[in-house]
Image (tube, rainbow, N blue to C red; front, side):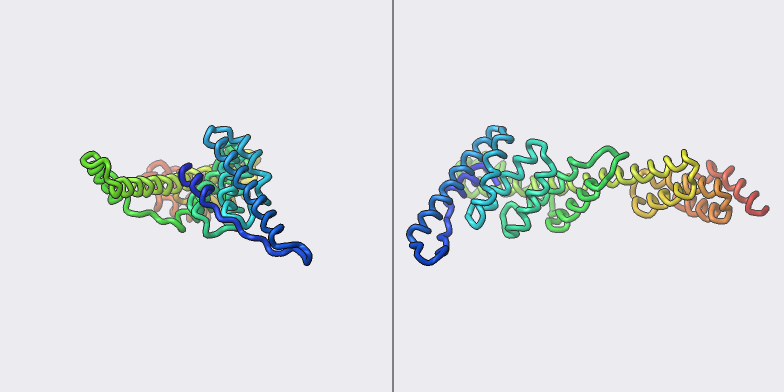
Length: 300
């Protein structure tokens, strides 16, 4: 949502009249309290929005956090949550951002920010994804949330959208004052931006899966160094089973054959080698010596 739209929501905001809290409390007093509280939320949100637009995200956070409770059940509830989540994200507080994007979706499922919140939730976890040698819980969460994003908002015909963008761009050159052309051009550009986010999500999943595969393969290699070949084999199998679409699957098959030979599991080694060569027939000549070694020991 654009900054102009956000300000528009502030201007057009409707406030709810509170219920009577107890007998003896007049409805006029209660309404006055509700009006005052809503005005404070509007004022606080407006200040925070100005800070955010200026790029002072830390200040925006400080202005928005006190509004979390007072903005409940008002027209600005989702605006406050979304702007706070974005402020956390922009200031590098990705765990807090993820928590706030999740909270927004849970509290207000019908919010117009739902699509952007889902994408930025996944991206927040992506930002938290650590070096491949470390625990990968955030990597997995990022993949999961990007998958949800792709499922909820599937890819549209990008070529048609690109064509629409160019068409209305040319029409505006001919008639720059045409409001219908302006609206259609803005809509097409917005749709094209969404296509970019979907492409980003697909690419991010691929990159993050490579990291998980590398992490698992790295653990297998560590067990090799410790001469714990059975444990290494378990992690090679994990790469083969879970990440067959990554660059590490070939190395995992080679590692599996190697550990089975080291463990003198000749029959299993033969089967693993056959499967490996079916998947990678170009390795036939390279693995000829390994095949001969297995055959010789298997006969004995």
